[in-house]
Figure 1 (spheres, rainbow, N blue to C red):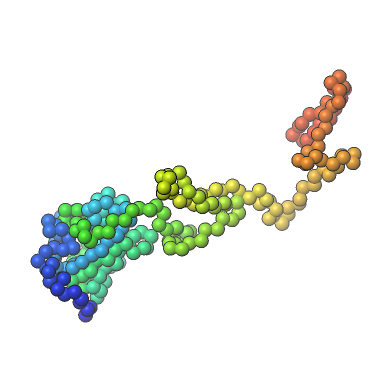
Figure 2: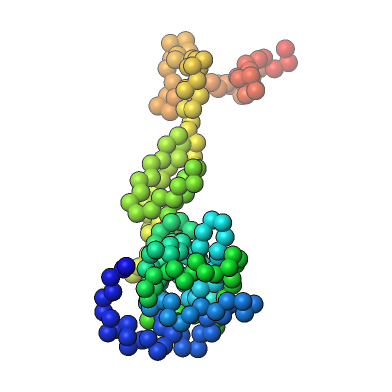
Length: 247
């Protein structure tokens, strides 16, 4: 049996629908299920970016178990929680697996085992939480990073750029007093990627021409001294073509 603390606080709210608003009907859209007002005694929900009202959108009972879905008015931010009948609370997780809330039961959650199999949907008017139970948090942008195997990384994460990927931490254009701090990712490619091939042969470059070396930029300049000279020098796909005009 779970321990109960602050019994006086719970008793003071016994005649209300707390943590739901007093006008909440607690009845699903098809009127097939009405949640008892006393099933929950408290809640704390902190979904980043959520727009009031925050409410229970769906209650599901299927072969996978019992679960509850909480969302906001825009339905862009969701949180789900598994219902364990032997527990006295429901932990809410966002799609990335981060905890974003907690709903506390009055005693335990055995009531939900009596609910027939199915999916029960609710409207904001039916199951809206009181503002006291919702902690407003700004949607800060990236909250986690997904990898190929489906794992979501959050908290302290190291990003390392390799094989032509360059990462830069910078301040994006925003408010002068509070600029946006971002990580810029540039995929520039690896100019030396061919060297990783076992069959790669380094190119052989001209070192000197008739004993003359290249200039500071590595260039050889071959020009015709006289304008009336018949010697011509042109570029071609095969390289440099030197020939005599008219021959």
